[in-house]
Length: 307
Image (tube, rainbow, N blue to C red; front, side, top):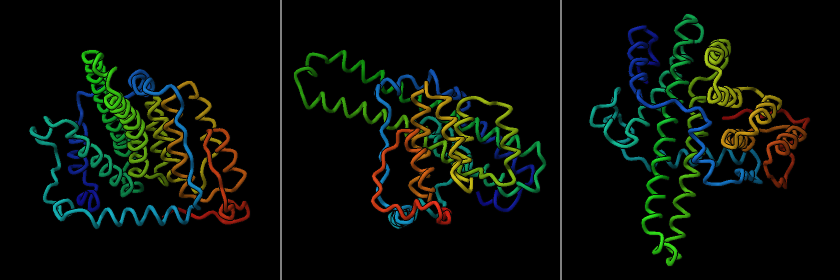
């Protein structure tokens, strides 16, 4: 990350690109279709999202306080760089999920290079970096969905082997239900989390044409979600029409619908949105919110940006 801040030298960029390509290199990139069917079947109902009653200023303050508290509780070993490794070692690769941290870090570093070089890098290298970020995010998710599927399979095999005992033990039944609930929320959490990390890492601004070109080269469903996440994160105003149109387009895909709900609700929690637009998007996406104080939704009030 330090070198990415200092230089866009091709040697450095190519080394980071090479490292990114080596992460989850055998994983099948997610499609948000067949590979998430197991997650969707864990619950036949759509995710229900209820927004908090507090206003965006309070929410932003609470989020910032939470981040500060998390930093205070970290040990020095986690923040002084002594455990950083630019490329996963063979030992790390053999650990389950060992590459996920390296993958997220690679996405952040490549995003930093894009932002630093938005005006200085040529079009070709910028597009290559953007496509590498999106493909790495898809491979990371693809591997995580495979791991979740394996966990489901092991659990189902356990249930089949111990069915008589489970049927007679309420606590065991409850534990199994909680386990599948956990897999369900992990499945949706990683989809929304990685999409948000991509959006926060690459930015937009002068990169809009680069990102559009990269998406045009591979307009797959996950990349459509990444595109929406980026626009939600960096547009001056919440792109209401784009959100609703995308939601309607993929309304047959429960997983994508739910990811869109999560991404949009995050923005509604921390951004001031005119009342009529807020009501419209909540109605279309099925988001629940009981607003006691509507002052932050006043259509005549200037929009407040994010911290």
